[in-house]
Length: 336
View 1 (cartoon, rainbow, N blue to C red):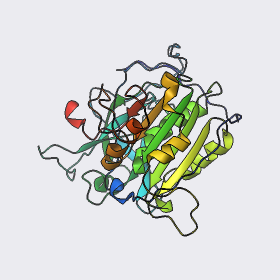
View 2: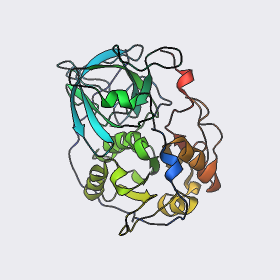
View 3: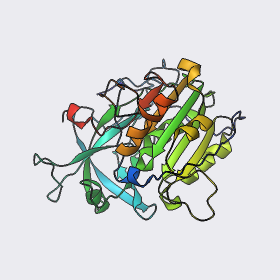
View 4: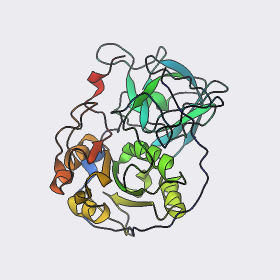
């Protein structure tokens, strides 16, 4: 099992803000970017330290029932419909436990039972997902999952009934986020690739010691496709000095006043801190493959970002400043 540290209770405290929101328009279309679901996996250590990076676990911390080396089954507790193609799936954890996932990390969900979909090798399908519930939430963890009719996993999940079980393996650590490691963090997300950004943001901006300024560019097809919008708008309202969000749409309504089209260099330049700030700035990206290719290029491996391409390279960012949180090309590196 992996070592963990206590997650402090996060008081709601407003901060003052330095950044102002910016908007830019692009004529290109985003439609091709949203054909696939965005999963996440990446670099990190199994050691889970607290936000200062030094505090060990306390005796009162709830234990995690998860196993990074094998799958454990948990029953579906309830389904909460979210929009036309997305729902919250709440899975029950044993009494007296919590997921205790490091930030940032995800888990693998694997289909179970006689009707489980199979991959090309005849094995039950498994995919990485990032929960949206707090790591220390006792007794359950929550996933926001979009159904793709042509997908291998999401139609099966959408047909689950209360009491049906799903197998979970994890955590699968990504970037080991530390409070105040950077002055400015930019985030670019597309569709369901928003979940790792939400995990980091909730962890960071609600910490009373946080001074890092976060800017999120969130691209979607239409307004009805924007996931967690109420949550992001509330975070912006509560923490105006350290968080801002810009929504861009491919098919906006007639009265839409925000950016439209691709996440392009102009929008990124007007929204994020410049690349010449060096190690003080970090850019996280997660979305469908088309978007990733356009923004930063594919990730080389779990441990290596690889050659930076696309919009971020055009704007002068380096491999050390950018981090892709997607895993489309990485599943072959992981052993079950």
